[in-house]
Length: 117
Image (cartoon, rainbow, N blue to C red):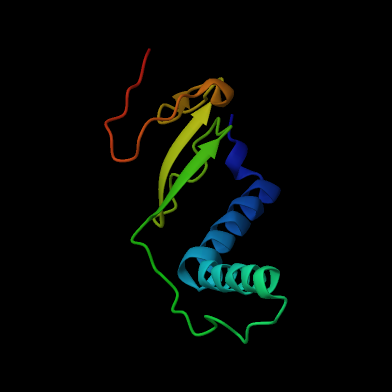
């Protein structure tokens, strides 16, 4: 089954890639953080805070770590900007882990993965 060959599917993958690029590499995360800090300041003081953090530089991670849930076909495997971990109940691709995401147990950061089965 070639799911990712459909035009609407390719368009959806391209949209996801672009949104990640905007958020992580083009300053979206920094703008959101500045907006949250302004909102918190207003809630605390009742006064507006002038454009806090508008000049914050964008970060550009080497590769974005992407958790692809429900990925029967490993749809982001040809996206060099992503380090993908793909999960699906019934994977259709050898690089997709068989997993029920709702029963997934998450460990501490920077620890070794434990994969059963």
